[in-house]
Image (cartoon, rainbow, N blue to C red; front, top):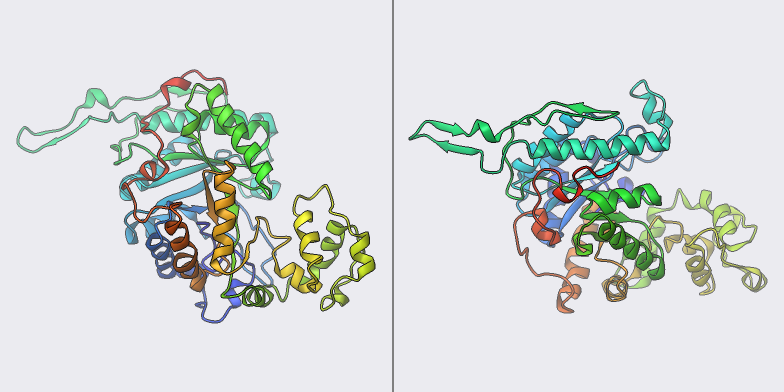
Length: 435
């Protein structure tokens, strides 16, 4: 489950009835939402991150949490099984700092942490560190060095080094706790990191973002990939490319799991689901009308928000090949909805939006999964306060009844949930891998 700003994935979730005021700083609410997701047996929470201000906050909050690692520290103490995955930049951190924070949280959570590995290229984020953005080649060189050094630090306390025997007076076997003494072009570390292994050994590596560089990173290191795609064919192609990249790196393709996004619009009926999204988008839909027009090859004015497209417009409309969401927008427009209602279908949202009763979302997820397009989904809930429970009580039981989703956690760690192998330290198959 996408776990963001304390309100939900829709920009105006903060204004919905019943949503606590000040949710962005209400960590009791964050823990309560995590517990609701855990009640639904979600495998993990996923926290994106951005090292600057990600939006104009005049009328809606940032979509991100205040500081993800500190947020997950609070969540870890209030949950027992659900995995905890967050983004941390390889560009503006040092390997020792990241290794220490993530492994501490992994121990604190009893083996539930994951690190979404990303570089940072945004100029405003770089300016927060008094830096200029790195060139693409350099930032990915640094990323490879960071991952390899962090994993080496994680493994620098040997798995059986902790003796902890009061009778003999032996606390640890110092011979199994060794410096790593690694020097790359961009980063270096001495080590060791004085933290024993967690129940899963060390945190799980995730990756988000495409392109050849991202594919190489995922293939070499990732056990989970957070994707963005709008069709089964594209999702299947992305998953196939990831599995091939893992195989090329000497790994078993089944070690890498692809999660596509989905943004359910739930309601007892389709009309109720649309009305909820109309309320959530009342202030942002006018500004989206011109872009909807571009998607359909039409000139549309916000003054026509309450009107459907004319017959002539529907005959002229064409899905823009440059935007994969356009085909869905055209299909919805042809159903006779007003322009405001077309937008309420989530046709400009950043993941597919099944609209209507819980069965509609369950059908979407089942179709994609059975087509071999995904290993799972990361679910963006519109409003946390009531939307998590709606998904847990509506969609998940249907998936369970269809034999598509577990009825309880089979294990205790994130690696257990994902079904990926144990790892401690740098993957021996990748030792000396080119960055």
